[in-house]
Amino acid sequence: MKRLIPIILICFLLAACNPKVAEMTNEKPSEEHSGLYEDVKSDVIRDVDENNNSYELFNEQFNKFSGRVDDKLAIGMLLWVDEYNDITGNFFYKDQQIKIPLIGSFHNNRLELYELDQQGNKVGKFEGEVVSEHLEVKGVKTDLKSNKSVSLSLRLESAFPRHLDNLYVDAGAPSTEEVENFAKALKKEILSGAKFNVARKISYPISVEVKDEEVSIENEKQFMDKFDDIFYHDYLTSIKAGDPINMDSSYRGIMFGDRGEIWLNYVFSEDPSEATLKVTSINNSRDAVNFYLEEINGSE
Image (tube, rainbow, N blue to C red; front, side, top):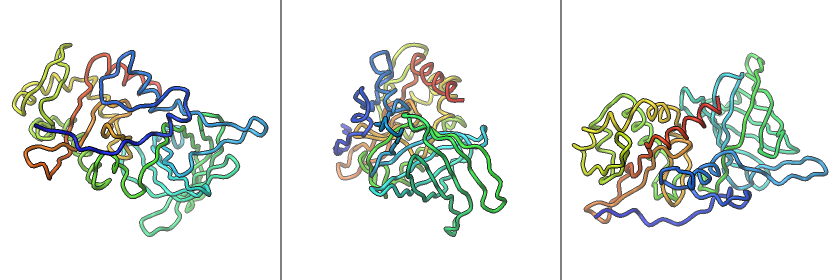
């Protein structure tokens, strides 16, 4: 009998700063659950000093942004802001999924970040100003070699406390790399139709929707037989848009996809001393997928 690893409950700072209480869930989104998913996203509002329109990032937290460079290159960004507003973090181009280190600071509504190369040299600069209580940033990105600048736009998606050296420690992960390597492989295998490899990553039994009916898949053979029905075109579109790095997580598990298209957890099997990272929830209902795609299309 499998059981999930007992792990310590963490509270996302979103819950404290938002009128709605944010709680990540690996259940399928519905009318009653859609608000929970909204709180994971960009309904983050920071307290504002009305006298001088001063905004603040979340100190001693990870601040997770999405945005665009040059109006066309989609990026993700994860920034750790210490008590003095000094910043370490990374960004990645969504079509490449490679983390690039950043250092910088945030003062007087202005974000200043330096992109580092593999030798730690400054090769690029992000400069921007927070322009709304949703922590939207408008500015420029400059190549320090050519001195060419292009437009920059960012928006805060979520903020959460987490260990600097392990993004997924609260979900029982031994390292960030283990989780993200698993998620990268899973995404690639799903999109390429590698049924056997995906089936081996599933924790059984698992509930999925097949032709508008919820069914329980009991083993790898059943999963492979139903693979094309589980991963239909629109669901694959939402998975393709998901980032297998810098993912949100909580005591409920690790959320692949901005709307929780897939959830990962560490589970025990026969040996109680060992746990394995597995897919524990596949949210592929038509209603859920339409919900995902509305968010994807709205961000383009």
